[in-house]
Length: 75
Image 1 (cartoon, rainbow, N blue to C red):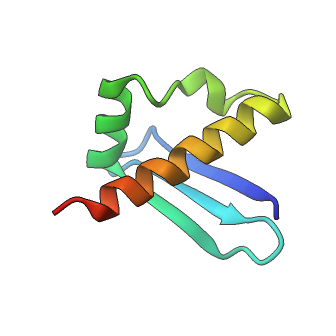
Image 2: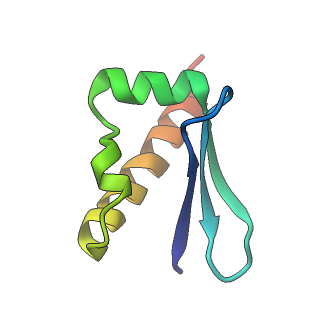
Image 3: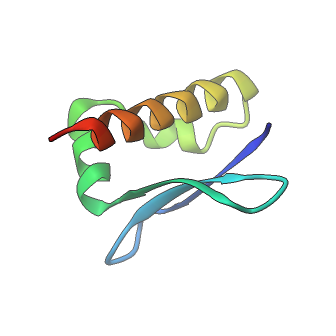
């Protein structure tokens, strides 16, 4: 399965989505508060979003999925 990162970070309500490239289905949605948390923890490097290297993007998508699942499990 391949994914597409759709990031709108320079708007009043920034968000980042991970989409299934084949269907367009939203697999993960990270909004402003969570994006701030990721940046504060050092887990979101904006330069990685601009990378064209498949291994860098694969690792980024993996980490974003893990973050979403971890956040969903919080009480």
